[in-house]
Image 1 (cartoon, rainbow, N blue to C red):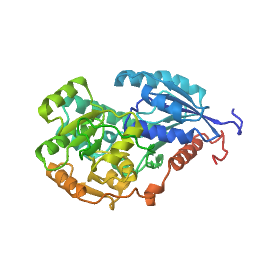
Image 2 (tube, rainbow, N blue to C red):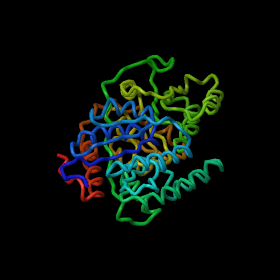
Image 3 (tube, rainbow, N blue to C red):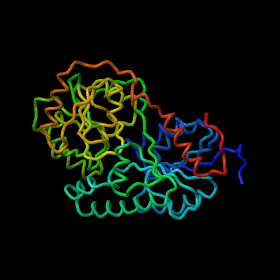
Image 4 (cartoon, rainbow, N blue to C red):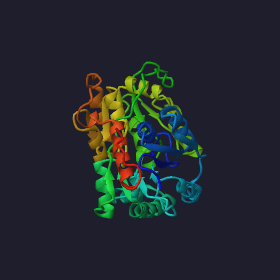
Length: 379
């Protein structure tokens, strides 16, 4: 039995999270969680996320990189290898993905994937996804539902996502909402954007996931040539897909610039500052980070009209449009581009929330799962 003064040993599984929203979320959260002296944190993460965590977290945090692997291999690693390693810890934080079904340790599972719950996700898969993808998502939805039932705490990251989980699962006492906060951006680093030079452009920051609808976004900018060109910053999901997109663009690669993954967040900050408009285009989200980053940079923002976007960005700073209507998207960009530049806003309301708040609330949930262990205050 651990003495009450001994730090709570927390194993964090972040293997499922990659560069992008999930990776940014876990780096921001664990940077603050690692500062809490009553916790001893060990993290398993994908290589790119592990590299960032080593730079950001306190020196006492143990970070292990786990090589990229396919879904089935990853699940086997999480359910067998990490389940064994969890025996040396007091509590497990599954920071994405699914519960460890074979581990007896108490677990807090954080949901990130918007496909796993709710009727809108089912509709989108039925309307837009190929059969193989629909089957895969259906299996994942079953695992996600089982994870809610297995976990001592299932953590949602927005009120909108909580509503979606409860639509799917009904009210459950083990569901806890711990909201995120706007990610930190370093001082901007300004670089060239393709061959656009100093020309105006519209920025979209998103990986090429199907619910981000790159095809619809690209088509809107090819059809509506009176709005500035589009710069897409994000990873493309396969080499075959990249070749297909470039073939589709042909001679239009000044009209739509495929910038690729922007790993340097200072460069990303520079893109937010330079962009005429930032567009957050998506059909599904849990708690999107890009609108908050763009607003905090002083950017003019347009966003698809879905509840998570409204929860994160509010009504005053953003022009919303129906994500199924590309003409409405173009109209929103025109309207935003005609607005005068904004000063960088001061935090207020929901934007005053910090990642320290998020980490403190997570620590409280983790402690509650191990009542006979460390009960010291995290302050």
